[in-house]
Length: 483
Image 1 (cartoon, rainbow, N blue to C red):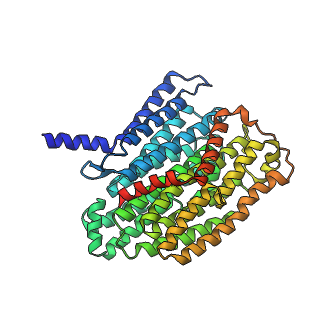
Image 2: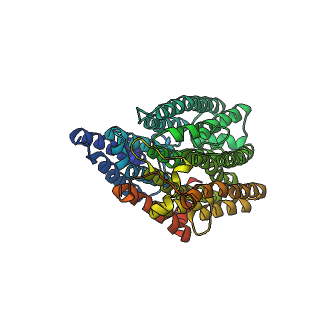
Image 3: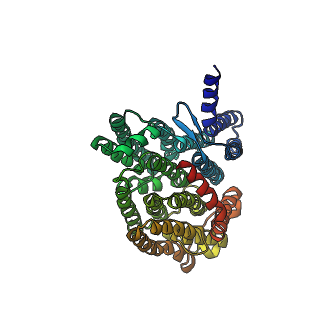
């Protein structure tokens, strides 16, 4: 009896961060039912405060030894806790970005915030999954919520199109993932990652390799790796801008969490794994950067930028070392802040009925609204990898780890791609300062929550760029627990 009670308690502990977020989602739903005035932000306040509680709970578990719950299908280690913190951070920043936007666009606030929270619970479970079936279930929890979020602007044709495209292509990707899990089960007799690792260490059969390839297709879709990236520009452009920010940082981080756990905890011994990732990294960063050069929509440009940065992040897994894994985790943190800042500026440029997302819409903004100009400048320079920004530090760690692992040509290609990216990131800044504009925008101070979130993201981008030691230490500790 004592053993069964211990097993139940262990299972609950392994699910604790995600359960807290689910509880917050239910509470936000109740608050929205009770407090439904047009200007009421009760669900948003509940969501942000609840995510803060979830982060505190997660931090309280950091010093505990790893826990395996539900027959080993969930693993609560520092790796899982790291991504739980990152998912909660991304969700909280998204909610803060959205408060004025949701009100102006007449989006159902309760539905919106509850879906963000439920998607976050799926992200947390993806990072803690110790079984491929749990990876699939958590991915679907996250994905279904994001499908709906992408179509929250019901009167906007582009938003409807984005939701439908994302749903249809996501369903196909889920099918590939599920079929890959079936092949892996047929080859190994289990879907648990620890059992899979023991089988792979003895040699990989053709059926197992086929299953691994299909797993890579399914997870590659979620992080927008080429050639599984075609959905991203259309969906990012059509979805509400706040949702696009959430997808760019939260969904991508969750996808990399699952990919890293499967790659390192189960499939690291396979000789085919690293060459596949090497090829995908090169294709992804090149396709993203080259395509971004010709974009006139800032959202599409940032979508292709997101694709390119997925290629950079993948370098950490290609390196296959503790330094590479820690660099991947660190890069996902800095990517969160600089993307939230960039999308936050786009939100600040929008007005009711006007998205103002084209490069021409940025004309003169840097001079007329210096705060927005400086914020976008910092974010673009960080995304380009300029020194004294977090983006530079993140790329430095990734490229250094790859060089130490002997991936010289991969680093050369990545550096060339970074140079290419400077052209289109500067292309965003030039009209802001070098052209006259006539588009009127809402003064940033009229949206205090949005402005505060943008300034926070910019400040963190600069602070981490100047002193990255703290976040890097946490990333090293988190990845070490995975291995």
